[in-house]
Length: 295
DNA sequence: AACTGCGCCAACCGCGTTACA
DNA sequence: TTGTAACGCGGTTGGCGCAGT
Image 1 (spheres, chains in turn brown, purple, orange):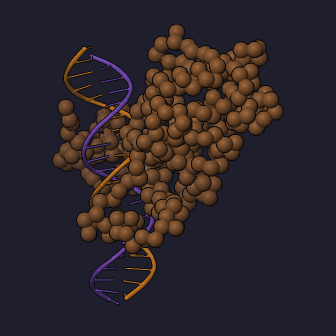
Image 2 (cartoon, rainbow, N blue to C red):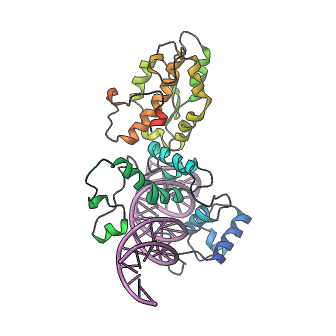
Image 3 (tube, rainbow, N blue to C red):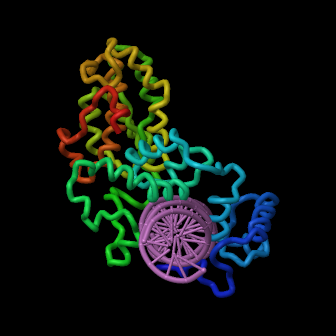
């Protein structure tokens, strides 16, 4: 199909925004709210395309934008989330209140990527390799394209196909019967397809999972698990630590925690190891107790 | 002072997804 | 079901400013 770039129309302003334009846009949005970007410029009297207005508002004018340097805590979080999510800047930004995806992307590209890269290649001796030169302009000058880190999936995909229902798992666990090792995997497009069973069955069912479809919007729910009380289930896991393989008796709550953690690790592993073969269980990462500290 | 190289970041671009007629 | 407009995302670019020579 293809479409004409919405910002290519003649007569529209391009480049840096003026204070007057900012004021017009801010006033208009305060009055009419966000959205309907396409018609906004005409209605507000701006010689900009809607796309440009949207970007200006989201990345600069929005009142809840946090200005100033990225703090150490934020930097730490960005690094961890990037390791878990890859270049999913909007998702990462969603975990950093007041920061925009553009800001985080820029910060990563200008500060963190090099820092991480240096750490990773500290021991490598070929530091003069031009293809790893961090400077974009220097590389362009000599005709080297800026390589992105190996991305598993660069385009966002909404998840509407399947998810792990934490509540169901919790409910199952709360039954605390002989069968309380049950887990539930739901396909949200077909709620009748609820599967439950033992850990081994879970493992098998995991193979039929479509990881791509389980990422994106719902992934923040998985991330939330890290901070949630769900991890408190370790107290039911025969006294073993959460995620401890030793707690995987069929009747232990530890299996429940493990199932959840396994999924986390599994998805994270897919992001990190593009070559992982989901049909080979031995390739699923090992599940250490303090796995989060190691990402 | 003039020039050059580089880092930073706002803005742009292309394309995938979603919504809707 | 199909076509299209709108939206949103990630990659890329261009310009400004600073530091070094």
